[in-house]
Image: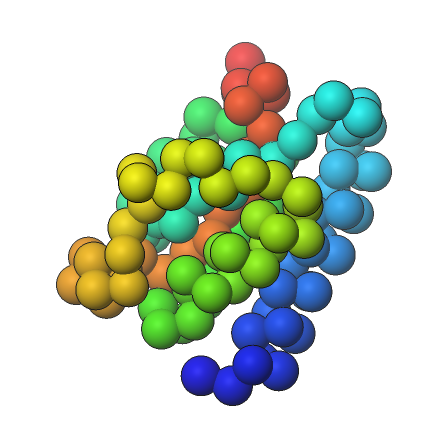
Length: 107
């Protein structure tokens, strides 16, 4: 995959996250939790949290965009061992990057 494509996808996603954070009055301590999920995983997160910012990404780009977005949000990679790898992203049809704020469950 092309570096520029990944960079552009990441930049557009981070822009959407910042807009949503402003729009929904996030405080400084509020943060996004990034998830790589299938379509059904995205639906569940949308049902459980608000706001949700999701984007469909080609599976072969997803892991790189996820890492770039985490870096752009200045988030650590402490839970890396729970993440799907490139092979499982393809085999399990994981194609969404979804951000939620865990402090904002749907009522």
